[in-house]
Amino acid sequence: MDPQKIIEQYQKAIIQIAAPSGTGTGFYLKEFNLIVTNDHVVGDNAEVTVSGKAFEKALSRVWFTDRKHDLAFLEVPAGVELPEVNMGHYETMKDGDAVVAIGHPYGLNYTATQGVISKVDRIRDGVKYIQIDAAINPGNSGGPLVNMSGEIIGVNSFIIRGGDNLGFALPVNYLREALQLYQPHRGLASTRCFSCGFVVTSANIDSKKYCPSCGTEVTLPEIPEVEAEPVGVAKTIEDILRTLGKDVKLSREGYNVWSVKEGSARIKITYNPENYFIAGDAYLCQMPADATKIKPLYKFLLEENFRTEGLVLSCVKQNIVLSSIIYDLDMNKENGVEAFRNLFSKADTYDDQLKTEFGCMDRLEE
Image (cartoon, rainbow, N blue to C red):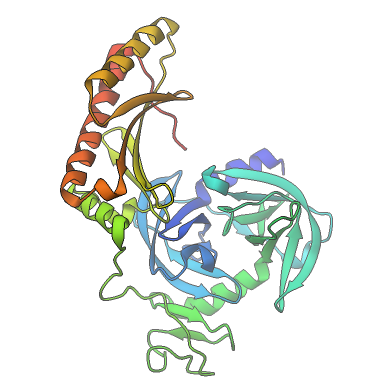
């Protein structure tokens, strides 16, 4: 199959996953009605956010984890229709076979890289992996490795840092085994004991922390009765977002990163403890196609920056961005609510005004 056809076939089945600890990739298996990803992508979280070409960002329950094989299975958001993709057979693969790795490296959504299998059975910690030279990077984790027949033959799992295109994918036979083990326990928080392979569930766990088969301490993906709250500046930011009516769980996009929608504007909030600043960047529309509108647009942006306190309009490539920067020691919940409310309100207003008066175009989003 042509690589372009493979990419087209998989685009709506590829899922972007965000947890408080970071982001990664997953893919949908219609046969099991589950989203597959890496265990290290979901971390210790029983809920993560998922988004895709076919649906908006939503919360997804983590039902099964397998630490030894770095696998996790997630619930598909209700009412979502996703395409069917098929699993292939690892046993038929050989060194030199062409493959395609699909994922979201460094936040670059729906990136596909082509390469070959360098070694079909590289063994690491007692588990076979497919070594590939197709470029995979942070964010690719949990995405599918696909053969040239368009079948999934592995789950992209890790790279060797500092290596030159040294990527590794878990063979699909391990995935099949884990899926079959999980099937009888659907709807129960489950984990596969990394010591003996027994599937531990909320119904059979010993003393709420031990594998009933071998006694190894395990952790189930269970939603805690009291959710752990962030601390410090991150807690203040989330308190502000709640006050402004935003869903904090859906807003989280990684460690100290949040993203919200206000009207047609997308606003990204980041906190970097190393430089002590909280940045709110509202991505508005794009520059107008009509070149005669650009000079008046620049004049308007400069005049608004002179008139507006605490906000800055700028052009980043083709995007018009409204930004607010707050020093962390200066921010408390009260002034933060005021600053963010002003940013959110002005973002939506400016977005509409720029489109109406200057012919600015809708921003392209993946």
